[in-house]
Length: 160
Image (cartoon, rainbow, N blue to C red; front, side):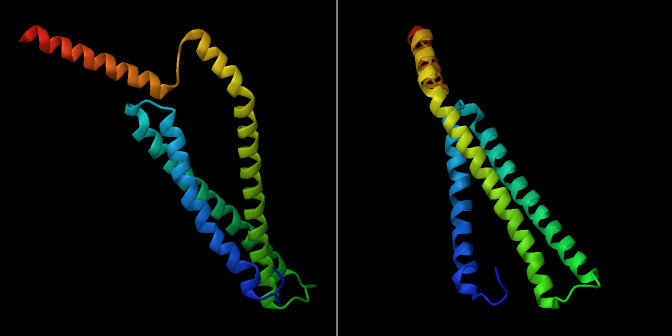
């Protein structure tokens, strides 16, 4: 962002989009993980998702802060620099923003690769499930619960 650029034209709108990404990533990741695990493991999966998201935030912030510090320090210590202190600060902020853009691009790339893998694997997985008679974890758990309920009902009938 150039030093002369108005705050409202770029930065403000990007700051409006940031919470939307955070507010959608955690619930969607929790739903996806909980749909693929048995009920007894969903709490552990939720805490794992929360831990990974918080670690990612902390590590990303650390990388951005490190980039800002080193760029700012290098420019301040450069005797040939003709930049004002304000422009030096902006260059450090810009370096941190570039780190954020790079990490976001990496996340999008990994998501697309995972999505392509799942799309390509889905028909093969369906054929395997149909051939073996197995289902996803939620269906298996529902069958186990139904079997357990039938066993409990059978015990109640025999004890009466």
